[in-house]
Length: 148
Image (cartoon, rainbow, N blue to C red):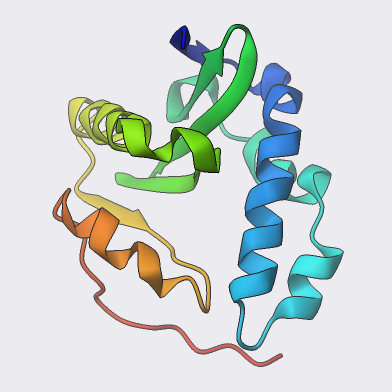
């Protein structure tokens, strides 16, 4: 394996669209209550959130194996709050610690930018990732309930 970690700019988000679609499908399959949301969710709609964020307040890091994207992490900073927006590693690459490296890199970036809080949202039905995030000091604080 010849994996490289790269930071990309917002105008290159298209490079992770297939990976994001895989994550969206996982969320759809895991969801207890919002499968229809994930059925209608598109990469383009998800990226709309990032359009108005300044380049200084978004970090997009990808992992490539021989120039093919196999993972990514998108993090943002808004009003002193750092958020891991989206994280995905292809299944066959998960055992190598790449997700941990991406999260550590994002947290370091957020701390270096004086974030007062660091958060990550976890989709309904995807609570299995709690143990992964606890390794970084991220714990469930509260659960938001939403009407379907």
